[in-house]
Image (cartoon, rainbow over the protein chains, first blue to last red):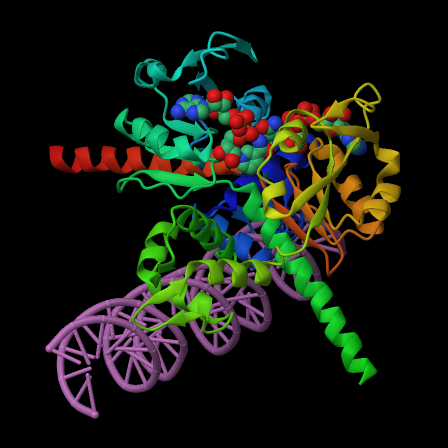
Length: 211
Length: 211
DNA sequence: CCGACTTTGTGCGCGTGTTCACAAAGGAAT
DNA sequence: ATTCCTTTGTGAACACGCGCACAAAGTCGG
Ligand SMILES: NC(=O)c1ccc[n+]([C@@H]2O[C@H](COP(=O)([O-])OP(=O)(O)OC[C@H]3O[C@@H](n4cnc5c(N)ncnc54)[C@H](O)[C@@H]3O)[C@@H](O)[C@H]2O)c1
Ligand SMILES: NC(=O)c1ccc[n+]([C@@H]2O[C@H](COP(=O)([O-])OP(=O)(O)OC[C@H]3O[C@@H](n4cnc5c(N)ncnc54)[C@H](O)[C@@H]3O)[C@@H](O)[C@H]2O)c1
């Protein structure tokens, strides 16, 4: 069900183009998946399609949004206002999906107090208070790897049960807490791996032809 | 085999702590996976373990690095020097893994010519020339969604066969080209989904107790 | 009202990846 | 040398997700 956000984005794009209904085939092609898979996914949240016609775009947007919990607002706190933290704070694409950046937290006192994207950067000591005050339910970790586990523990202790981690470490959390990891180095390494296999296969192919 | 980079990172951490050998159990626990899975993964690249002892850390680092193609340098080009492109360019963690940022490309002429992380930002028109000149094999797309497919097509036309995409669109590429997508909004939406299910389950549980 | 056409929803077989469990292999100690 | 202990490498059961293919359901034109 990690594909629902992709469908949602595709549906939003269709809605903006004024499309009223869409078939599973069309939507699947835009979302880059098999049409049977898409239909099965959608059937898990109820029968919202009309046979012979397809799905009502607006209605489907509403149903998926509701399923994903996007009809409510989520308060997000970002810890670590460095290269990445700044980029995230300045990104406008979150607010439109119901994610409100409620706080920016830092350890470096020379950064604390400055304003980024209309928000005052607060000291990391205020983490617990900030989480309580804004009802933060999602914590984003954009600190160096060495500080990540410690920050994560404080998030968990403060009652945050969803964490998005950019630091290149495996976080240990108690049961009931969700962690998602975004690791750009790993993405590059996977690309490099396939890239190497491509050129390797080519070399072998040339050798085979030579022989 | 998307887990090899995780093992590699764990091994590097162990090596820095002076650990010479490691058992599959220990390494699996650090990497956050099942030990049988880890052993099967490692067995796919040969028998590098010693029964009764474990794996030699340094030797395993070398073997995995070789398998991933990290013994050679990869030239990376980043297109779109905005919030995200800047953060990526300034990040030092890539170079240490063999990824060299060879070029920064932009469409906005007010940004072209400025220096970011010691690199001069070049105009997007130079894409083909830059790819050729530096032997770029991995292209990173950090432009707005509307420009992503177009940039991707130019990368592919220039001979780039691996693309890392940060724009929230599904890219269409010919066979043989690898695309990996990093979509932060989707990560947040997945967390929100689980978060909602948690509180939903709690509500149902309270209702069940009340009844 | 009916028949032709379109599209959904799903049963089923298939392939992949995961985990358990254990035999074989090596090291250490006597 | 023999025995015991630890740990690897892997066979086999299992789970799961994917996609084909098709019947049921609904639309639309006549
Ligand atoms: N920038 C990138 O493109 C990029 C790419 C891949 C991974 N990452 C990872 O993302 C993380 C952040 O990267 P970055 O480039 O923004 O690093 P950065 O050094 O620019 O920023 C890190 C910030 O975290 C702050 N910090 C350190 N310890 C803290 C603590 N205990 N509590 C609160 N704040 C603390 C630092 O003061 C700094 O401002 C790193 O783990 C990095 O490995 C970044
Ligand atoms: N910043 C974030 O934290 C974040 C989070 C999630 C997703 N994203 C996605 O990443 C992408 C970049 O985000 P950003 O915040 O850096 O945006 P941004 O607007 O700050 O930067 C985009 C840059 O791309 C340049 N550009 C536009 N068209 C171009 C073209 N055809 N060729 C070359 N350059 C071009 C623009 O001039 C601009 O400098 C967007 O697609 C965004 O949706 C960003």
